[in-house]
Image 1: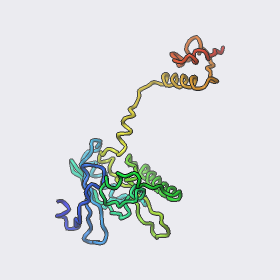
Image 2: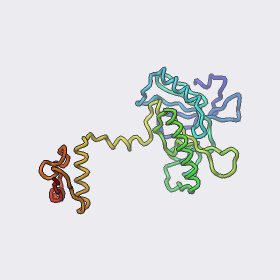
Image 3: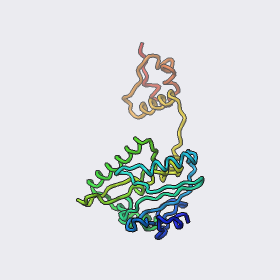
Image 4: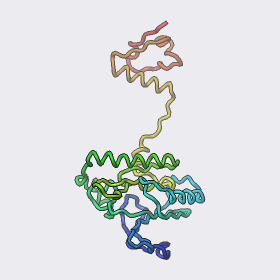
Length: 253
């Protein structure tokens, strides 16, 4: 409704379910000043990982709008409230890197595009080298700017034609740079959170490492001062589980 009443923009059509986020909506729009250029409007609720105040978030989004880099997709317009955010960026007919791999159109429904893994095809070595270089350049730039970006995946890498067009190689640009600021969980977050952090002290970590090496290779043995009688310096050798660890320790004097 905000853009329908804005004289600068015209809403062309909704793009339903082109992404994997259930509460993120997409619209194809164009500027009345430049009607030939189409843009993608996205509207999403703020996520649970939001760490900035509303005022700081508005300032950060304004900074992203003014930021330019050839390997980062620019933001044309952004607006945030206490509960949601609106972002406008250029629309690319080429779609994303994942669209290229699956040989589909970016405007199609997400499940229709990617539900059939047999449609996917690998990239040639030259393409992998070129696109990988573009992604790394974009990541380095964001790191230098102090902008967190934990949303790297093939669906967040936009493809555009090179200028001038000299080959079939495309230019890669990182998408959704604002996601971390908006507090949105990453696509691979469930895979990461299942590996919960284990609290272990240095002594136990060294003890476990020695135990595993002694059990893996019968040529490994412990040699050192007090490793036999007093469990080693700072009790690092204490409570080794394997029988091999008990048999293959030699005390030096």
